[in-house]
Length: 146
Image 1 (cartoon, helix red, strand yellow):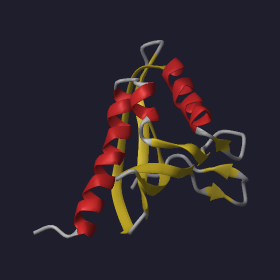
Image 2 (cartoon, rainbow, N blue to C red; image 1 turned 90 degrees about the horizontal axis):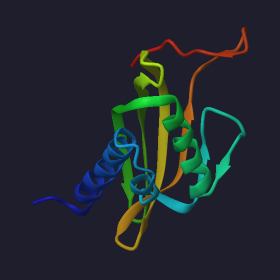
Image 3 (cartoon, rainbow, N blue to C red; image 1 turned 60 degrees about the horizontal axis):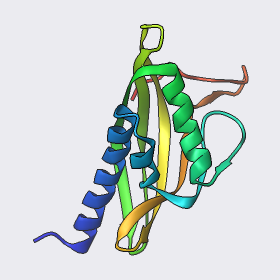
């Protein structure tokens, strides 16, 4: 019989899968349901932080302006859950077909999701996306793969 921990971990994995589903469908309303209204996102583009669900959805909407078809995958997801809070980390890749018809494999980034239990479900309260930095060159390294 599954424990509460097992049930919570499965729910969080499903929650992350719904990000993939929402992006592939270009469904901002489906994505909205995954984030807390006060989510703080440390995304790959400026500014340093995006505060609130509208700011987070603005980032996803921007993605939809570049891509005719969007694909997203998460690999090597590790989940830790304890009562009303959880975090998950792994690698994510946004890819697809650009509006001009060019297919792109995108790049792998590091992703972290911090979630809190709200009303019996889970919502993303914080997420962070990053790439390693070549300290000597001062640039992000975007050609790595998990």
